[in-house]
Length: 239
Image (cartoon, rainbow, N blue to C red; front, top):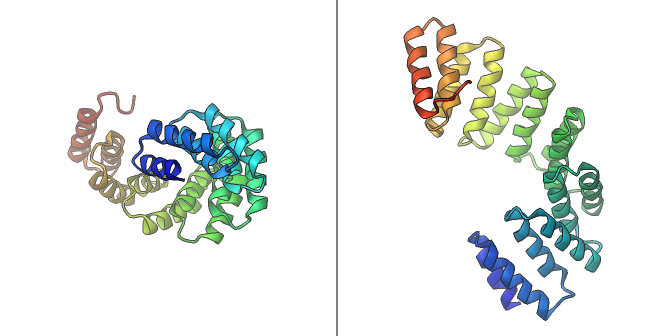
């Protein structure tokens, strides 16, 4: 228990190597505790060592076949490796063990999105939102799925809700601005990019997009100034 607890502290500080060392010590002392193995799997996952993560999650599942978190963790690792068949199998199992886990359903939606199956992604994001109406990422990602379907209006509605829930996320403003731009609502696009730049003044694309929108509004001087600012941040912007 002591090694596991110290491992949790190291993990919280993102010192994954020390966390893994302590979890390994805990496992040596008690090799039948699925929690210790699962914790080490998560540390490997956050370290981006997905093969070792999958191995640990698999061991945890053998020790506790009803460990929903291990199935979910292994699914996440398979998803990163673009092994979607195994990812979907594990997400489905995790969800069958806990149908109220909004994050498991959300993550399965991400896997569907990665496969460009936008309809199924939207279905999962919608269910995640039903279970957790404060899930800002689910609104944001559903917006990106609607963008994939070229449904700007629905995307804008979802980005607006994600911004309401998380007003410090610059990307929400950027994505909504892109949809406003596509609809030729250049004034609204500029307003959103103003906010995005306040939140993240290092994003060259925000300056560049605002500059182009200003030019469409007839503000050529302002547009040129923003495009110049974008190129100062990133000389390769828009290439």
